Length: 296
Image 1 (cartoon, helix red, strand yellow):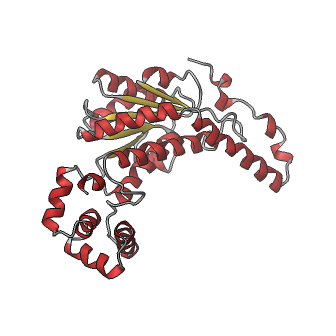
Image 2 (image 1 turned 60 degrees about the horizontal axis):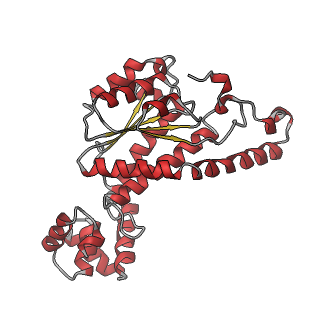
Image 3 (image 1 turned 60 degrees about the vertical axis):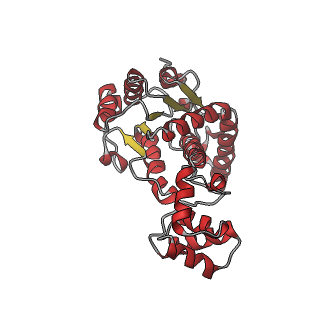
């Protein structure tokens, strides 16, 4: 394992050696300039991200789950991405799972030592009954977190596909995983504070993994969130707007179709575009596993 001090995420950034002497504007400007390296680092690993998305789509189509596992900032980012999937894509909360070393308490407090246990990484996957149809994504900015290594090793034992996201090359978690996504945005503005560029890098990669995977399993039509759940006033209006945009119709027609489809946006869209009733629209979508374009 590479010595911590020699990792990119731990090196001193030569552009911020006098951070404590900079004016506020100078400090903000240098942070902004450093953040520009995040997208550049991700661009270099698009092939690995593409490979990961293909695996995730395959596993989700098998009835498996997308499971994120990490500690500290990395773990919180995984939990955040998992929590955003149900309201965005109408997925059951069990489909995308976020595990963090130390459990729920670690979302708001630092749980010292929890990330150092390989066994805990394994036990947390056992607790949710990991199986071969799932896919496990291990997150660690340093790429060496024992909790994540333990989780990935256990998943490998079950032959569950594994993906690693790190911000250092030749990472320990990358060596454990089937697919290693190692995007390196460089030393942090504040030395070793991986909630900064490394955190942004991981967040953007998670955005890609979950969003494009959901596109792949039929949760999106055009660029519209067609499985959104209209559970409050804002989302009811959003559902109407989505139906209007997808079908080029007026609000009254969209509202009527949504009422007849029990608030199911996809069903309402098929009803309007194919001029059919609810039952026929539902049948079409079932035949195509929820893909609107195929149903059309």
